[in-house]
Image 1 (cartoon, one colour):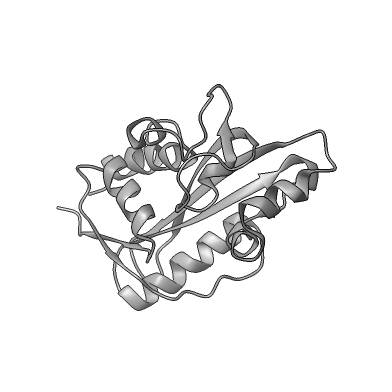
Image 2: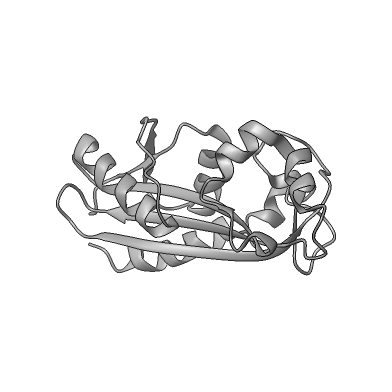
Length: 184
């Protein structure tokens, strides 16, 4: 039987989503203040996984979410958390006001390792969409401003049961679940 995986997050909303999508996988969680290096999405996720594994001393799962604007060549990308803290939903819209292209990609990257010194496996999901004026409940990051392609509701407006079957996080976790099914 595989040991329990520690999902490293202090974000209660993220934890609920992951638990809902990963039903059947034994997860616990722990909030750790991990340094977020500057780098690519993959470099950030791998660094966080290695650091967390050294602290937890067992299997860990970390996540990094990015929101990449086409008009900005992929920015704010993995730095979206700080953009949201400083400019909010309205600021994201203002950033794109001068551009006709409001397209974006929501990118979720999970990094998993069995423990210290073990290889880090990366699982990434991408959802294309458009940045719109905030609609729906505020409270989970940039969800009110992200309209996924093919839908008429922002992530925030969608029922969780729908979001959790189409989102960038869902897509990444499906890849992780496939990998974990082969793990002993």
